[in-house]
Length: 83
Length: 127
Image 1 (spheres, rainbow over the protein chains, first blue to last red):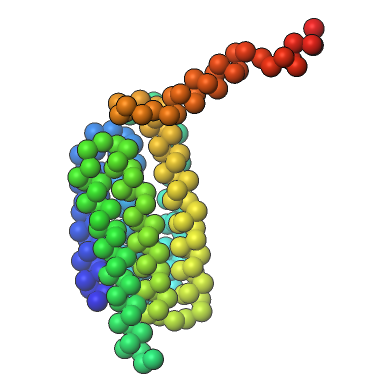
Image 2 (image 1 turned 90 degrees about the vertical axis):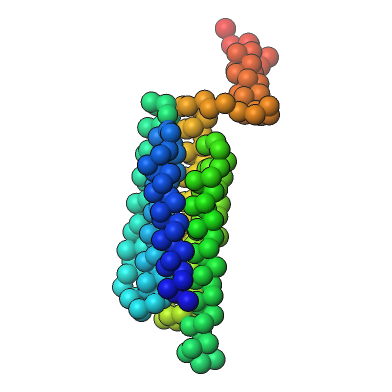
């Protein structure tokens, strides 16, 4: 089951990366990067459930904190400089 | 319940959550303009990470992991909408993409600027 979840998350990561590359504006890239971070978080969580890597949950917590700061800063950039 | 049953239940939740994340990815690639793409990228991953958190909690069943996963989910539920709102506001004021016919924010801004320029009667008593 968790292998199927990892496959689905890989597809999601590929789709977010597609938007990250082709995104016409900076805001598209910020949004796609945010989604990619969430995908990575979910991937680590699935790995925790699959292999019982309990210590890796702290990494997910760190990504959740830092990702929010990054989104806010890049949003300020978009507002100052335009897309 | 036996260990295998817990694992199966957790695995089902993991697959549901991963499906929501994948749907968000499809929406981000396929939708035509920035607002609808942001709509896809902001909402579906919140539900996805919630389902995956439930799946991990059901699969592992350790107190530390359950508390950490709960913290991650709550943090994401707080930070995700705020981040999406900040980004949408920046897009509206910084990029000015073309909107459809209804633009309630422009009307509200215009009303706010009119009331700012026209002071209330109480303010005029001060010389």
